[in-house]
Image (cartoon, rainbow, N blue to C red; front, top):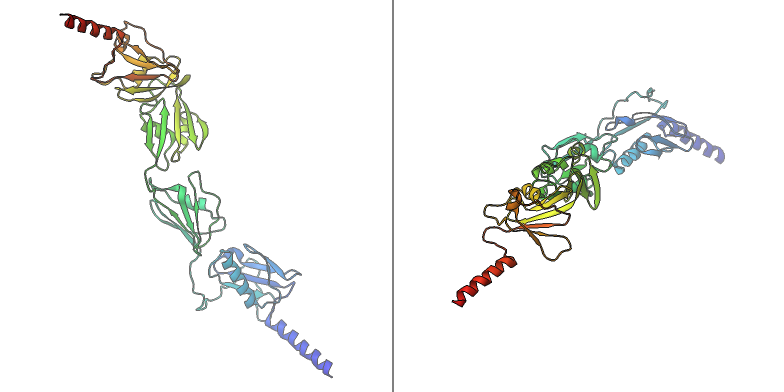
Length: 381
């Protein structure tokens, strides 16, 4: 009699479990999520008691009531940072009192309880050094790159230090100057583009009118930087452009690739004239002293003209040219060259040209001998 009573109790318990709708292997369930409609639909619990869900993968729910299964899935969505404060509704298909819901038909969402207020957590924002803050909806596939593509950085934006702050307070910094990394976004993310703390520059050298430093700003192209240096040296046909970045040298076609290639802070641009052999420097009393390229046809006269000409009052009868590897300079009369009384002087790579300004004169051996002779005449009397 005792065994019969125990069997009756067990049978009653099994019937009660079936009536309460405990989820069992091979059951079919309908699931809806108020914040993520991509999860809505009908699913089958396999023989191991697990169900395959979007975003979460395999979740074990056999032996749980629909309410407990809802709580488990809501917690997983929150832990995986997919949905914050998720509201999930689960029903066993065919259970007493549960209507049959065809696949892909959205069940009525569960009314929120006071403990789960209705919010709009599926959004993220981009702010900081941008023309206007952007608040957007996070969807599957949203990344840091897609977020940055929605905004226009200001000229002072520091794309090398973009800060991503998650809803839980964790923060990460990314260098997005070459494009943002493929980092997924989640609800509640905040993306800040800071301002540059100090002006940054790039350097342009070679066959440009005014070689030197150019102030950097986001979106600056190689062609823009060359233009800010006065453009390519007049008379240069088909310059060779090289972008130098962290020790890597990249050749760019002129002008198409130079116009399409953006620059990063601390980059350098080298402009070499077609057929150029190397570089020379011009120092002293010229309008644009600096670093110039030299080709097979470059002469002292053409170089001084490229440098903007000599300043008023410069000593052009004695222009110094120091050759690479030589200890003493050679001197040339630039005025005689201009007047056609003397042939022009070809220049080579590594030459340094020095033009003295007003009040600075160089005296050679002939001048020294004249001074000594004049002193002898005066003292001899």
